[in-house]
Length: 138
Figure (cartoon, rainbow, N blue to C red):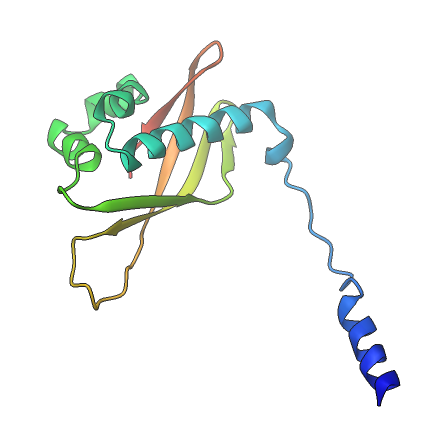
């Protein structure tokens, strides 16, 4: 009986042989800069730092998005808790990346209802030498 258990335990500890393919985007310096900008913007959203959030927007995003949308995004209802999840991004072209994002807002619904994330994509663009900005908002 012990031998069977040890064989089963050894089988479970063995690596599955499945290999993950490294992302080419993950090794790109621009990817890391774009991801940092996306994270900084979403952190500003999370802590309701409107000033930082607006500073991280590209001129194009500021002009193509209404002030009301920017305000409602960066200033949610009082008493809410917010969190986010960024998934692996994709390089659309040099200097332009897109990241899938899930936004979680707690405190706006009934306590017995499950929390459902809202899924979006944000686009991050290089605006200058080493500068990155959010070009498309959730």
